[in-house]
Image (cartoon, rainbow, N blue to C red):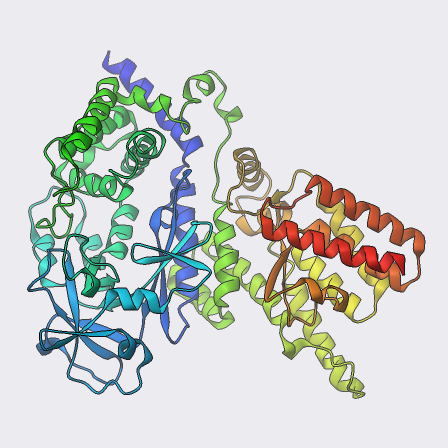
Length: 615
C-alpha cells in the first residue's frame, strides 16, 4: 500500500510540475522580480520592493502583484536612543503602548521638518503628541485612477497593488522572540540572518477594531515572508500552492473572504518550522498536503491563527461569527475527509485524471514567460537606468547565464526608451547637416540595440524612425520582413498567457535555444509597440491618437506605417491593400488584447487612415 501511495505521490508531483511549474521555473519567476528590484534601485525618493504571489513564484488564477514603495527620506526607530543620524533620513518614532500586537503608531520626532509635504499634511494631534495619520497618508497618494484597497492603491482592474510605506532598518522588539525560539531545521541561520538585515516596514492601515485605527500602522514583514517562501523546498512550495488553489477554487466561492491567502501562508510557516525537513519530499507530497489541510482545519476550529513573527496577534480573534464558523468548519471537514482528492474538484487541477494517462512529454508545461509582462510594465513605468543594469551584470550575483540574459533583455528595452527621447531626435528645422547626421546615427545605434528582446516591437520602432526621416522604401522593407516573422506561432506578451503558448515557449527554450532565455524571447515573443505623445518616433498623423502613453498592437502599427508610406509614395494600390488589411486585423482582433483602451486606440487609428484614404 505504501508503494502505491508513493508512486501516486510522485505521479501527482510530476503533474504539479507541469501545471504549477518545475523548480527551475519557480526559481526563474522569483529571480525575474529580484533582478528588476535590483536594477530599479536608482530612484531618489522610493525603493521598490515587489511582493505578493507573483514575486513568490506562483502564477495561479488569482495570484496578485504587490509592490511596496518605501520612502527613502524617512526612517522609523523604536525609541530615541536608537537615532544615530539626522542628516540621511527624517526620523520617525514608534509608539505601540496602546495598540494591538502587530500594529503601532508613528510619532513625530522633535525635529524640524521644514516644508516636508508628506508629514506636514498627515500629522494628527492626539494626547499631546503628533501622530502620522495612516488614513491621511493613504488619501495623500490616492488618485482618480486608483482604488484604495486596505493599505494599498490598486489599479482600476485590480491586478496591481502598491503600498507606500516607511521602513525600520532594525529588527523590532515585538518580534524579537522569533529570532531564538525553538524550531527544528527551518528556517536555517542563513535565512534568519538575511531577514534580520532587512528590518521591517510600516504600511498605512490600522486595526479595524481600534477606536484610533486612522492613526495606526500595521507592521509588515512582507520582505521577510518573501525570503521564507524562497527558502521552501519545492514540495513545501507545492503544498503552499495547493492550499491557495483550494482556497481560491472552493472555499472562497462558498464563504467569500472569511479565509484569505495570508492565513494559508501563516499556517505553512508554522507547520514548516515545527516539522522535520526530511518529510518534505516528492514521494510524500500527498501526506504533506493532508497534514497542512489538517492544520488549517484545526486553526478554524479553535479560532487560532497566530502571527508568525508576533504570536500575540491572533488573526482569528473575533474573525468569525458563530454561524460563519459552523458553516466554514463543515466545508473544511468535508474537504479533509476527502483528503488530497478534494483537489481534483478544483478548476486548476481537475485535469489530473485525464492527463495522467498521457505520455509525460505531451502534457502542457507552464513557463516563466508571462512574468516578462511585468518586467516590461515595471520598466516603462519606472525607467530603469542602464548603469544600474550594467552594475548588476558586473556584480558577483549575476554570474548565472539566466541572470545575464534577463539583464540583456532589460538593456534592450532601455535602448528603445533612449531612442524615444529628444536627445536622439533629428531636428528638421536645423540646417546643420553634421548635427543631424550625429543625431541620426545615435538614434540608429539605440534602435538597433533595442531589437533583441522580441520579434517585432524593436524592428517596428526602427521602421517608424525611417518613416519620420522620409525613408519610406526602407520603412516598407523592414515592415514586410518583420510582419512575415509574426505568424500564429508567436506569443503575444500579456497579463495571462495561455498554457499552450507557455508550453511552446518552454519547449523552444529547452530544445532549440540551448536553454537561452534571451534567444527564445527574440524568436517567440511579440510585444506591443509603446509610444508616448512626446516621442519623435511617432508619425505626425498618429499624434492625435496618443495621450501620454499608448500600446499599439504590432500588426496594427505595422500596417498603419505601410499605409502612411504608400500614401506619401502616392501608391494608391498599396494604400488600398494596407487599408483592407487594417480593417481585417481590427475585425479579427489579430494580436490585439481584449481591453477597452486598446480597442479604442484601434478605432481612432482606423478613422485617421480612412480620412486620409479619401483625400
